[in-house]
Image (tube, rainbow, N blue to C red; front, side, top):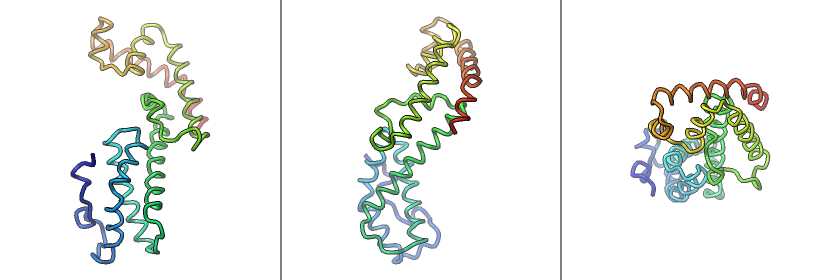
Length: 200
Protein backbone atom coordinates (compact mmCIF):
# COMPACT_ATOMS: atom_id res chain seq x y z
CA UNK A 1 0.00 0.00 0.00
CA UNK A 2 1.30 3.46 -0.88
CA UNK A 3 2.54 5.26 2.23
CA UNK A 4 0.87 8.45 3.46
CA UNK A 5 3.91 10.48 2.41
CA UNK A 6 3.19 9.72 -1.24
CA UNK A 7 -0.60 9.46 -1.29
CA UNK A 8 -1.16 13.17 -1.85
CA UNK A 9 1.46 14.84 -4.00
CA UNK A 10 1.50 18.40 -5.21
CA UNK A 11 4.04 20.90 -6.40
CA UNK A 12 3.41 23.06 -3.37
CA UNK A 13 4.03 20.28 -0.84
CA UNK A 14 7.23 19.34 -2.65
CA UNK A 15 8.25 23.03 -2.88
CA UNK A 16 9.17 22.62 -6.52
CA UNK A 17 10.62 25.70 -8.24
CA UNK A 18 8.66 27.94 -10.58
CA UNK A 19 5.28 26.53 -9.59
CA UNK A 20 2.62 28.71 -11.16
CA UNK A 21 -0.57 26.93 -10.11
CA UNK A 22 -2.78 26.50 -13.17
CA UNK A 23 0.18 26.12 -15.52
CA UNK A 24 1.13 22.80 -13.97
CA UNK A 25 -2.35 21.72 -12.98
CA UNK A 26 -2.81 19.34 -15.90
CA UNK A 27 0.49 17.59 -15.21
CA UNK A 28 -0.33 17.00 -11.54
CA UNK A 29 -3.80 15.80 -12.39
CA UNK A 30 -2.29 13.20 -14.71
CA UNK A 31 0.34 12.23 -12.16
CA UNK A 32 -2.17 11.71 -9.38
CA UNK A 33 -4.37 9.74 -11.77
CA UNK A 34 -1.63 7.16 -12.40
CA UNK A 35 0.37 7.43 -9.18
CA UNK A 36 -0.98 4.23 -7.59
CA UNK A 37 -0.45 2.28 -10.81
CA UNK A 38 3.12 3.57 -11.09
CA UNK A 39 3.80 2.71 -7.47
CA UNK A 40 2.81 -0.92 -7.94
CA UNK A 41 4.96 -1.02 -11.07
CA UNK A 42 7.87 0.25 -8.99
CA UNK A 43 7.26 -2.43 -6.36
CA UNK A 44 7.52 -5.07 -9.09
CA UNK A 45 10.54 -3.51 -10.80
CA UNK A 46 12.36 -2.96 -7.50
CA UNK A 47 12.03 -6.61 -6.54
CA UNK A 48 9.20 -6.20 -4.04
CA UNK A 49 11.09 -3.74 -1.84
CA UNK A 50 8.50 -1.10 -0.96
CA UNK A 51 11.03 1.36 0.44
CA UNK A 52 13.01 1.24 -2.81
CA UNK A 53 9.73 1.49 -4.74
CA UNK A 54 8.71 4.67 -2.94
CA UNK A 55 12.16 6.17 -3.51
CA UNK A 56 11.99 5.27 -7.21
CA UNK A 57 8.47 6.71 -7.52
CA UNK A 58 9.53 9.94 -5.86
CA UNK A 59 12.50 10.27 -8.19
CA UNK A 60 10.33 9.47 -11.20
CA UNK A 61 7.82 12.12 -10.16
CA UNK A 62 10.50 14.81 -9.98
CA UNK A 63 12.09 13.70 -13.24
CA UNK A 64 8.73 13.72 -15.03
CA UNK A 65 7.91 17.18 -13.70
CA UNK A 66 11.32 18.53 -14.75
CA UNK A 67 10.91 17.09 -18.24
CA UNK A 68 7.43 18.59 -18.51
CA UNK A 69 8.81 21.99 -17.50
CA UNK A 70 11.56 21.87 -20.13
CA UNK A 71 9.29 20.57 -22.87
CA UNK A 72 5.63 21.35 -22.12
CA UNK A 73 4.43 19.90 -25.43
CA UNK A 74 1.17 17.97 -25.28
CA UNK A 75 1.70 14.28 -24.45
CA UNK A 76 -0.77 12.07 -26.26
CA UNK A 77 -0.57 9.14 -23.84
CA UNK A 78 0.37 10.23 -20.33
CA UNK A 79 0.13 6.75 -18.83
CA UNK A 80 2.52 5.23 -21.38
CA UNK A 81 4.92 8.16 -21.09
CA UNK A 82 5.01 8.07 -17.30
CA UNK A 83 5.32 4.28 -17.25
CA UNK A 84 8.29 4.30 -19.62
CA UNK A 85 10.00 7.11 -17.72
CA UNK A 86 9.48 5.32 -14.39
CA UNK A 87 10.67 1.99 -15.79
CA UNK A 88 13.83 3.57 -17.21
CA UNK A 89 14.54 5.23 -13.89
CA UNK A 90 14.21 1.88 -12.07
CA UNK A 91 16.66 0.38 -14.57
CA UNK A 92 19.05 3.26 -13.84
CA UNK A 93 18.81 2.61 -10.10
CA UNK A 94 19.69 -1.05 -10.61
CA UNK A 95 22.59 -0.08 -12.88
CA UNK A 96 23.89 2.30 -10.22
CA UNK A 97 23.92 -0.60 -7.77
CA UNK A 98 25.62 -2.90 -10.25
CA UNK A 99 28.32 -0.27 -10.87
CA UNK A 100 28.80 0.00 -7.12
CA UNK A 101 29.10 -3.77 -6.87
CA UNK A 102 31.56 -3.75 -9.77
CA UNK A 103 33.95 -1.91 -7.50
CA UNK A 104 33.82 -5.06 -5.33
CA UNK A 105 33.37 -2.88 -2.25
CA UNK A 106 29.66 -3.81 -2.09
CA UNK A 107 29.81 -7.44 -3.09
CA UNK A 108 26.69 -8.16 -1.01
CA UNK A 109 24.66 -6.32 -3.68
CA UNK A 110 24.73 -9.59 -5.63
CA UNK A 111 22.72 -11.50 -3.01
CA UNK A 112 19.30 -10.61 -4.47
CA UNK A 113 17.33 -13.57 -5.79
CA UNK A 114 16.26 -14.32 -9.33
CA UNK A 115 12.71 -13.35 -8.37
CA UNK A 116 14.00 -9.86 -7.59
CA UNK A 117 15.50 -9.33 -11.05
CA UNK A 118 14.29 -6.14 -12.68
CA UNK A 119 14.94 -7.15 -16.26
CA UNK A 120 14.15 -10.59 -17.61
CA UNK A 121 16.29 -12.47 -20.10
CA UNK A 122 13.63 -11.87 -22.74
CA UNK A 123 13.61 -8.10 -22.15
CA UNK A 124 17.32 -7.40 -21.74
CA UNK A 125 19.40 -10.54 -22.40
CA UNK A 126 22.74 -8.69 -22.41
CA UNK A 127 22.03 -7.06 -19.05
CA UNK A 128 20.81 -10.26 -17.39
CA UNK A 129 23.73 -12.31 -18.75
CA UNK A 130 26.23 -9.74 -17.44
CA UNK A 131 24.76 -10.03 -13.94
CA UNK A 132 24.78 -13.83 -14.12
CA UNK A 133 28.41 -13.93 -15.24
CA UNK A 134 29.46 -11.78 -12.30
CA UNK A 135 27.54 -13.99 -9.89
CA UNK A 136 29.36 -17.05 -11.26
CA UNK A 137 32.73 -15.35 -10.75
CA UNK A 138 31.77 -14.40 -7.19
CA UNK A 139 30.62 -17.96 -6.40
CA UNK A 140 33.91 -19.39 -7.66
CA UNK A 141 35.94 -16.92 -5.66
CA UNK A 142 33.93 -17.63 -2.50
CA UNK A 143 34.34 -21.38 -3.04
CA UNK A 144 38.13 -20.91 -3.16
CA UNK A 145 38.30 -19.06 0.16
CA UNK A 146 40.17 -20.76 3.04
CA UNK A 147 37.84 -23.17 4.82
CA UNK A 148 37.32 -21.14 8.00
CA UNK A 149 36.59 -17.97 6.00
CA UNK A 150 34.49 -19.82 3.44
CA UNK A 151 32.03 -21.23 5.96
CA UNK A 152 31.58 -17.92 7.77
CA UNK A 153 31.18 -15.92 4.57
CA UNK A 154 28.63 -18.40 3.18
CA UNK A 155 26.45 -17.84 6.25
CA UNK A 156 26.80 -14.09 5.80
CA UNK A 157 26.60 -13.80 2.01
CA UNK A 158 24.09 -16.49 0.99
CA UNK A 159 22.11 -17.22 4.14
CA UNK A 160 22.30 -13.55 5.21
CA UNK A 161 22.59 -14.37 8.90
CA UNK A 162 23.48 -11.60 11.32
CA UNK A 163 26.93 -11.54 12.87
CA UNK A 164 25.41 -12.59 16.19
CA UNK A 165 23.66 -15.58 14.57
CA UNK A 166 26.87 -16.65 12.84
CA UNK A 167 28.83 -16.41 16.09
CA UNK A 168 26.28 -18.60 17.86
CA UNK A 169 26.09 -21.16 15.05
CA UNK A 170 29.88 -21.47 14.68
CA UNK A 171 30.57 -21.12 18.40
CA UNK A 172 33.01 -18.26 17.89
CA UNK A 173 33.11 -14.69 19.17
CA UNK A 174 31.34 -11.76 17.51
CA UNK A 175 34.71 -10.08 16.91
CA UNK A 176 35.98 -13.24 15.25
CA UNK A 177 33.00 -13.23 12.88
CA UNK A 178 33.68 -9.60 11.94
CA UNK A 179 37.35 -10.39 11.38
CA UNK A 180 36.64 -13.41 9.17
CA UNK A 181 34.12 -11.55 7.02
CA UNK A 182 36.54 -8.65 6.63
CA UNK A 183 39.38 -10.99 5.64
CA UNK A 184 37.12 -12.79 3.16
CA UNK A 185 36.07 -9.48 1.59
CA UNK A 186 39.69 -8.41 1.18
CA UNK A 187 40.59 -11.69 -0.54
CA UNK A 188 37.55 -11.49 -2.83
CA UNK A 189 38.24 -7.83 -3.60
CA UNK A 190 41.77 -8.63 -4.73
CA UNK A 191 40.77 -11.68 -6.77
CA UNK A 192 37.79 -10.08 -8.49
CA UNK A 193 39.03 -6.54 -8.99
CA UNK A 194 40.71 -7.09 -12.36
CA UNK A 195 37.76 -9.01 -13.81
CA UNK A 196 35.18 -6.48 -12.62
CA UNK A 197 37.13 -3.44 -13.74
CA UNK A 198 37.60 -4.94 -17.20
CA UNK A 199 33.84 -5.54 -17.36
CA UNK A 200 32.95 -1.87 -16.75
